[in-house]
Amino acid sequence: MSGEDRIAAPGTEESRWADWLPAQDWPRWTPDPSWREVAVCAAHPDDEVLGAGGVLAGLAAAGVSVHLVAVTDGEASHPGSTAVIPTGLAELRVLETDRALAALGVRARTTRLGLPDSGLGRCTAELAAALGPAIVGADVVLSTWTGTPTPTTRPSAGPR
Image (cartoon, rainbow, N blue to C red; front, side):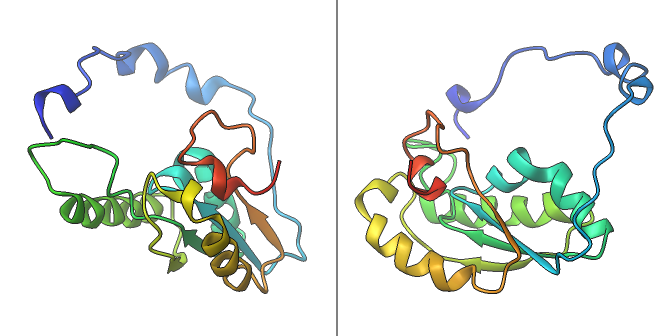
């Protein structure tokens, strides 16, 4: 990525949260025992992990099949980057998704719709036509919040 693409903030030192995190009384969640498959619709690579990573890990641990419906491959996430061309970026983002899901213990069946990143608003009919068949058989479908402020993500969230 170019120098402008890098996050320069120092972040939070691990020592600040490492002891705090396990001491929390987090609510326990278990999936409905009748669920066999959950589909997650992600507009961009990383939406499924950032938005529902904990849920997906819980589903996988409970033996529920996960079906990732990847709407785009994220090729437009760094416009103007001098480090990688869009096709290379798409390949990298797909690989990052696979690695992130593996780190969560999720072995997802994946359907890639291949729709244009940053162009979903122009192809909502194509998205609807592809998404319907992709989620057939799922007991539950997870998606982006319909109120998301991100215009490139909003079409995959469904009707408002």
